[in-house]
Amino acid sequence: EACASRDNSRAWRVWATSDIHTDHATNFEWVQGLPNHGSCSALIVAGDVATSLDRIAETLRTLQRSFGEVCYCVGNHELWNYPTKTPDQASSDSAHKLVRIVELCERLGVHVTPARVGGCLVIPLFSWYKRTLFGEHLASKQNLTQTERYFDAACQWPPQAGGDPEDERLSTAPGIADFMLTLNAPAIEAAEAAKRNDPPDDIISFSHFVPLPQLYRGYAGLEKLMGCTELGEVVTKLAPRVHIFGHSHLRVDMTINGTRYVQRALGYPKERWGAGAPEGVPMLVHGRE
Image (cartoon, rainbow, N blue to C red; front, side, top):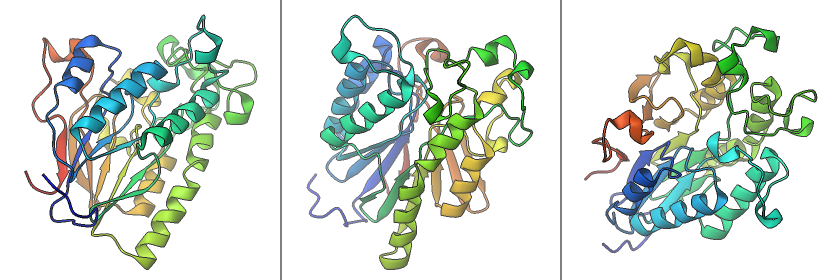
């Protein structure tokens, strides 16, 4: 399929997925088996591609062979920072690893900043979670269960990135989400300028974490680790036609105040009760089959 222009919006199709976890061999085989969707196609990947930098790069390159454009935001698994025997592969902490992933995407031509995809403006958002019940802030980490306290303990957070000075492995430190949200200032400014100067046909935003409490209907013991209300405020301000998210591995397709919220996670192999990908992943969110 030939695509004469990125602005040929009628020809473009945008697909979405999340949580493809290609550290699992079965999931990477699924990525390798995706068909070629043509040059007028784009895939939004709402985080949790893999943990290894090498596997992240390999996965994104593979996706680029199936889609004309790939748009991506970092999830929590990418920022796990295990020790390694090869210093050139090591990141000093999770904030450093985030920078390395963004630099990798820039080299590959994967969009991690707002991009025009046909007639759409696609806006990736940085995000994290707070130890909240989507609004009820838990000031003390003593309120956390053992599962919550050690969630994403493979990350390392310096104080400059909102980490707890007394516990660099505590990923529920509220400052981490605040730090991530500050990284969205250029994207929000670019989106507002685009809406004023060259309005897109559609706006599609995406984040890894859950932006609104009503979008999570999973295990209550993990709800403090799903997202934060400030992320929802950013999405509300952007007012996209569609917002894609991930993290909870739940199927979601819900319209709230004019925005369609979608999650189509591939998830872990064990969640699919057998080999193969669930039907409808990735999901078409713009254009026609």
